[in-house]
Each structure stands twice: as C-alpha cells, then as structure tokens.
Image (tube, protein in one colour):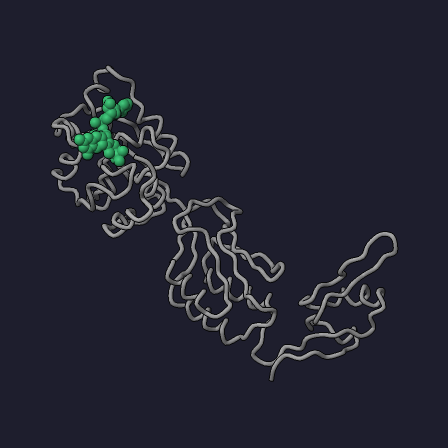
Length: 331
Ligand SMILES: Nc1nc2c(c(=O)[nH]1)N[C@H]1C(S)=C(S)[C@@H](COP(=O)(O)OP(=O)(O)OC[C@H]3O[C@@H](n4cnc5c(N)ncnc54)[C@H](O)[C@@H]3O)O[C@H]1N2
Ligand code: MOO
C-alpha cells in the first residue's frame, strides 16, 4: 500500500501528516501558513485549526513501511551517532536533525561509512571533516532525507551501516603531561631568545595539556637523549624535541631519537610546512621531533597530529602518507 490523501475531521487527525500548507489570514496583520505541508498534527494544533475554520483537513496517511521525513532523519542521525556518549541529537526542523557535540574534543568521522550511507537512495548525511577539533555545542553532522515520505527499508539499510562501526564520534582529550627538549647551541648559549617554548605552551594549552618543563640541550646527541629520558622517567605522556631536524651536520635530533631505541613511525611527512617532522614512540610514549617551521607557521604537520595524539590515537605510517593529498599549505 502507498501513502494516500484522506479527508479527516481535525479531532481525528492527531499523528497524521498535513498534505499541504494551511494558510491563516488575520486581516491587516498576517497572511501566511499556519502549518506547512508535512507538519505532523498534534493535540495542541486542534484549536488553532478550528479557529481558521478547518473542521476537516487533508492528511497524508503513511502506509506500512513508509516514514515521515522527520522520523527518517532522526533514525539516520541516531544510526550515525550509534550509542556514542558525546553526541546529542536536535529535534527535527524542516526535516533536518543535527548531531551536536556535548564536549570539547576531536571529531572522528569514518569517511567510508558516510559514503555508504549517502549511497542509500535519497538519504543525506553531511559531516564536518574528520579530525576537526570541535567545541561543546558545535554541530558536527546533519541528517535528512530528500522526499517527504521515505521508505523505512532504506532507513534500515542506513542503520545496518551504523551498526558495523561508529560513523561519527567526538573523542575527549586525555590529560597529558608534556616534556619539551629544545636543541640548538645558539639557544643554549643565549645567542638568540627561545621562541619554541611560548609557541608550544600555547598550542598545548589549547587542548588542556600540561607542560612539565622545558630543558635546553644544545646540539649534543647524548645530552638530547639524556633530557628525553629524564622526561620519560618523570612520567611524561608526550616528549617534544625542538629544532635540529634538517640536513646540517649539527642537526642531531632525528639521530638522537632513533638511536635511543625509539620506534620511528616516520622521519619526514608529505605536508608543507612540517615536512621534517619525526614521529616516534618510546615504550608507547610519543616522542616527536619538531622542525623550525612550527615556530612561525600556524598550521603544520605537528598541528595535524597533536590533537590526535592528545585524543589517544596512535599515529601510523599510513596517517603520515595520507597527508600528501591536500598537504601543500605553504612552503
Ligand atoms: N638543504 C636543506 N635545507 C633545509 C631543509 C632541507 O631539507 N634541506 N629543510 C628545511 C625545513 S623544511 C625546515 S622546517 C628548516 C628548519 O629545520 P630545523 O628543524 O633543522 O631547524 P634548525 O636548523 O634547528 O633552525 C632553523 C632556524 O630556527 C632557529 N631556531 C631553532 N630553534 C629555535 C628556538 N628554540 N628559538 C628560536 N629560534 C630557533 C635557528 O636558530 C635557525 O635560525 O630547515 C630547512 N632547510
Ligand atoms: O618542516 Mo619544514 O618542516 O616543512 O618548513
């Protein structure tokens, strides 16, 4: 059976769907729709309808297996959010349901699942880009369907996709204590003022990470390693080693990190700026080598990975490689 138009008495119309806009005229004051096509009639609508002379109205009766756009949108949004604790659903407005973050955190979206959902005919799921840092109250995704009446079977296809893996999540930032080792003899000997410290404190502070302290090592490999180890012994959750990341003979940072036994995920990234970044792990603790560009460029490969590390993700080689496409920001 398909949906059909039916004339019903308003008192019997609660829960049914208006087939067309209903116009209200208040002479000299207002002429416009009192209710729009698609509106689901509720108990409180009966009196206003009688006031505009509508004892009977045309409603759309949903057949078995059909959903109103609002219900379809709600179910698609719920399928995308799964039982994720940090997402809230808005009530439908003009057929659209939003997913809103209830915390400051990092949005993670499975792009393949979003594509699969949008492949279901006339289903719409629109999200922010994956790994966007979001704030409490930000809309991170929106769901709707194209027609007013939608087959439930298609919503069930969307729900099956949602059950396979989380589609949209917001990851909270974990508490993180950070050690900063700043290399460079020119900084150690006071020939120039350190610029890494203030920049890193600001970048880390934005995600609630705490700096244990910053130490200055010069360009000696053993000193660099000693200072990294000292932070690890103090229980650092992340160690950042600044400068000395490129090709000069006194650029010792990559060698120091690698030769202390850390597992190097990558030295170098296909993103500019930040192509000389090193990502390594020492007994599970991330140890990053930060190139000079982090001082002066607002968005580098470090800024891509920092929120992900703080949200508890382990960076893989594939994540580094993926930076190439779209990774040319400035050089
Ligand atoms: N021939 C090549 N040259 C460069 C390459 C390359 O691959 N081949 N890479 C370039 C890229 S990319 C970057 S980024 C820069 C910087 O790399 P480094 O991390 O090795 O930076 P440094 O040489 O240590 O310093 C560069 C510059 O910044 C000053 N500096 C360093 N630390 C501090 C600090 N804590 N506070 C203030 N200023 C600092 C340092 O004195 C130098 O002037 O290399 C490109 N070149
Ligand atoms: O790391 Mo440089 O790291 O691209 O400006």
